[in-house]
Image (cartoon, rainbow, N blue to C red; front, side):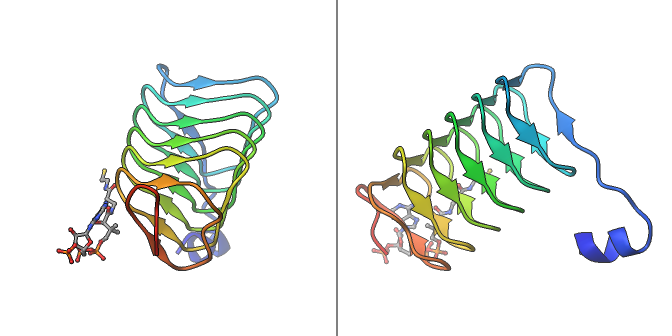
Length: 129
Ligand SMILES: CC(C)(COP(=O)(O)OP(=O)(O)OC[C@H]1O[C@@H](n2cnc3c(N)ncnc32)[C@H](O)[C@@H]1OP(=O)(O)O)[C@@H](O)C(=O)NCCC(=O)NCCS
């Protein structure tokens, strides 16, 4: 849908709530939404149309590919890689350095302790799929 709208001349813009914190050397591509209370650390890459919800955190040097969504209160640790269109559920935790594959869904409250393949639903503590 985003591509269709863009092909018709619409340009995405980025919204960062005034109560969100964005660290130094972090880049947000067009279409990103960062909501109140979110804290995105330093040297993070948010690709186009990434959404970081209320009170979520994203650690240093993380890379979130396009259309990835971090739901409220989730913690995506430093140096993680979140694939395109992946969703990290409310209050879930992705431990440092891990990768979540494209289109995967991490359930609410899950703790991700190893890499998650693409397009699976990972849930529980530790997360299983
Ligand atoms: C993980 C999730 C994607 C699974 O959705 P689903 O495939 O529709 O799963 P169901 O609701 O059919 O539940 C299937 C089973 O998984 C369990 N389950 C569902 N969500 C779970 C979770 N987050 N953690 C652990 N178990 C979960 C259910 O209890 C059920 O177990 P049972 O078969 O023993 O009864 C979803 O529950 C979830 O957590 N989504 C994220 C929601 C969120 O963060 N929303 C934010 C809104 S702002």
